[in-house]
Amino acid sequence: MEMEIRSTDREALAKLFAQWRAEGKRILAPKKSGDKIDFAPVTSLDEVSLDQVQTVQSPKTAVFPRVEELFSFSSMDGRVEIRERDPAAVPRTVIFGLRPCDAAAFSSLAAIFTWDYPDSLFSARLAATAVVGVSCSRADEFCFCTSLGGGPGATTGSDILLTAAGGGAYLAEIVSEKGRQLVAGAGGLFQPAMAKNKESFLAKVDVAFDRDKIGPALAALFEDTAFWAEQSLRCLGCGACAYVCPTCACFDIQDEGGVSGKRLRCWDSCGFGLFTLHTSGHNPRPLQSQRWRQRLMHKFAYMPERQQVLGCVGCGRCSRACPVDMNILEHLRAVAEAKP
Amino acid sequence: MSAADVFKPFLLKVDQVTDEAPDVKTLRLVFADEREGEDFTFRTGQFGEYSVFGEGECTFCIASPPTRRGYIECTFRKAGRVTSALAGLEPGETIGFRGPYGNVFPIQEWEKKNLLFIAGGIALPPMRSVIWNVLDLRDRYRDITIIYGARTVADLVYKRELAEWAGRPDVKVITTVDPGGETADWQGKIGFVPTVLDKAAPASRDTVAVVCGPPIMIKFTFPVLARLGFAPENVFTTLENRMKCGVGKCGRCNVGKYFVCKDGPVFTFAQLKGMPQEY
Image (cartoon, rainbow over all chains, first blue to last red; front, side):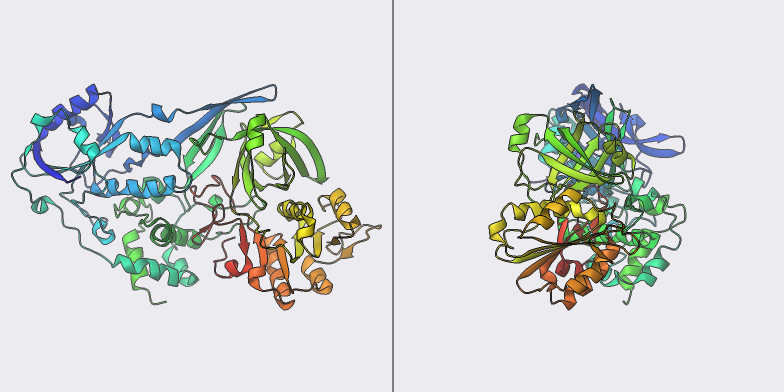
């Protein structure tokens, strides 16, 4: 569909929140709790925090919960009964106030969960989720969306993208049919746009490296063990980067609750030594340097080749969360500039 | 299986439990739902996720051939949480099974050729599916040779079947145990599989080799095969990286850009030469 550009304001958005709630939708938005701002269920616009550069956690939990029950089972006298989840019962959700990088991340997740065998719970959650992004008026030294084809005002992945235009006014880009349905019945809340150029309201994020060079550079560096050892010297293998990442999709499957229990899918990380450990004790990636290499290769070489999408959107969360200050931007620059 | 949920397992009943070697068992499994069993098909080389409810899932190749309908078999060594639970099952108990997953041994392309099977230890089970598959279609293949070794005589799996194969006029079987692993009445060879292969020196002309074993055995077997004249594209193996989902999503079984669960588990040595050592 052709993109519509409208203008709106806080008052109108507050009414829209009330409308979504009346329609039975769950609204997830950045919310301050203690000294952290993270996505949480909200009921009104007043609870929403939009001043931060980024939340600590990504909004991927809306479509890929940290722990998800795949099904439950009960066993009695050698017989087992499986109770499936109902994909139709996933909550209808509006994610409000996420950044354009986070909105773009959903297509990376979808590339993993829907290729070949579709994942019914993920697909149902994604279909039931509408995305109202808010452009970035500020960025920090960890942001590098523009290096990966995104931008502080990029519409990709948003159903509606809002850009704060000063004085409580917002420019509203209705990006998709889902976005149009979100504001259906709220016609009076959206006025014809006065200014159509949002550039002046956006943060500046410089391009830090040539992304077309990263894939080939990584392939050429694969066997350069000295390079990977140096790059990963500090890495603790804590997995924090994966847990805050909006595109990391690796998971574990575990049973809980005994013979009448649940089969759970839980977030996991390629940074953990146990991730690939065989029962025999053999480990195909026994070194942290190999695991760090896997993290970069998967996101910047394997996914672009196999799924035609990058596994990174440049949100910078992994760099902000890393307890030993590994900055992925610096590591990608090192890859781009390496002379193998 | 409903197309809706890839993680929902079939329910299978344990029909028969066979002790193969210390801590190694074979389970014969039949579908709890007869119609699911009738609809179920697989091809040799494919694997599945077997689960004991409450303990979790683990991954093995289907050890029985697709030519034997009505059941599937898995052979495993009791080692971790799930295999310990599997080892404790009695006939009549129920387990979960997801599959079949992965690619296959291209046995149709091998017709009219000689087949050389080389296996070590607990790696005979994935090969057993292929062996029975081609023996059930015996007239399509020429000479069939099986070289199988284990650490000790006790560790040889499928002892009854090894004897059955050795007794057939149309199969050549060479069994071996590592030095020190022999018993007083051991009739087979003594030595490591690559050495025994070297001495047996099977002809490579019009021959496909299938090699399954621990990484160390594979490493030393490939050079011997190369010396015997086997082209890397005529040498097949099956990789066994750790898996959770089996369907290319959970992210841990990859060897470089290849998923063992999707692009494998069957690979030729020619393919492995172009892949990093992540297996």
